[in-house]
Length: 155
Image (cartoon, rainbow, N blue to C red; front, side, top):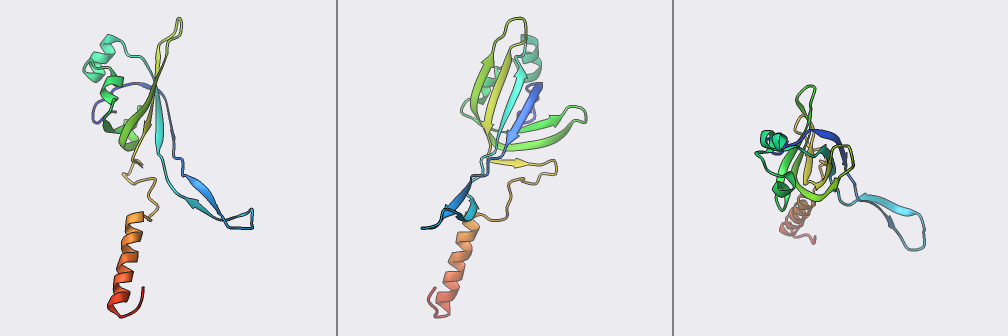
């Protein structure tokens, strides 16, 4: 779904959550001193059939999906077609890539790749939430420094 409109019958939806894991190394040792997860980049790919004119009229108000996606962000939902429930909600998703495969004697297939700001599970919880946020950590450090200076201590 794109917002509250069903826009395609997906053949495949693949998603990934690269965690930006990187080893931090010290001088004189080839072993990592610490492993940090520095960034998360939720991404998903939608592979679907090219819709006919009738399908476009029914599902997307006769609009081409690639034109609707260009330059805009959406909340996108992957639904379980059997139970009509949300599996994942991608918050602030933007199209990263569009590709089309035009074979002989087979349906045309479209692939859309997206990056998202967050991914929510069926209960509305972020699957990326680690509890630590750079702004909250910086705020806590600043508060601790202010409290220390108010006590006459050097931060």
